[in-house]
Image (cartoon, rainbow, N blue to C red; front, side, top):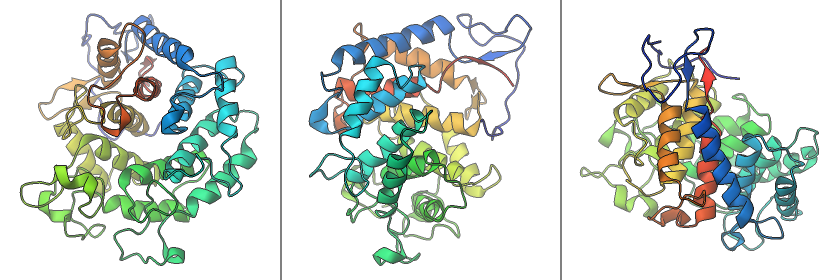
Length: 377
């Protein structure tokens, strides 16, 4: 169910693009990409991933179970059922990684929370007949145990409070993994009143370049543009994102992740944190690059971009020049432009493993699942 739009949408009388149908037969405005382009782009991506799937149902298992879970989620959201042969094979593969402690991850790995959160969302999407109820409940308990809070010796004044890192024992929580935690909690049926969700909101608020009662960390006021960064304190991940005045530069994928997490945690359009984040998005709207990072993490950015704008209920984004963008159409066209003949995407910047075509294609397919054409409501 869509939330009410956070930014007013102007219904134009003229079609913004000659290649996209502007009206249904009944005269209603449509948003999103040309249906044929959309289906062709999605179909090519699924075709590539189908050919890449190993006999055991995995994709790029050398980097963990994440690519398999993300690709499977993308296929499920693109219309494939849990009983589809390819999807079923991947789901069975992921089930083999359910651990006795409830986590779902590669044994001996360091990204146990990250992998478990992604698989929870995937299993919930496939859970039409409640086949994964027990697994999801156990996995939910596992990820809750990795959150920094009072039981783990952190009170609300600690910058780490409410956050999670890549692993359950990670001492360095970050916004990216905390956003995955929020996604998983929501997928498991939890809302804003959930205590873990409330704690996550505390951490997320401290990752925003916005000095307020919710963020009085040393970096809060140095940039103060409403965007988000990776961690409330300067970490190795942020050394190349430091602003000239010593603050932390906001960038696209974290800003969309932070805003989405705030929405899932119950903040409304009137909250100053939401307003500031939306304004940053309007000033930095882009489908060509990850604002602040260029091509680094580009396909992860595309996913956070699409999922967040969909959660906001937006059909158009008005940028700083008052130009309105049908973001679904523009993102689909950009992904279609970047798609290789074999249906894959790959990032020439291999930071965060996006040089792996299976992972980049999984991100691209999942991003597209939020871009389907629809009529204005």
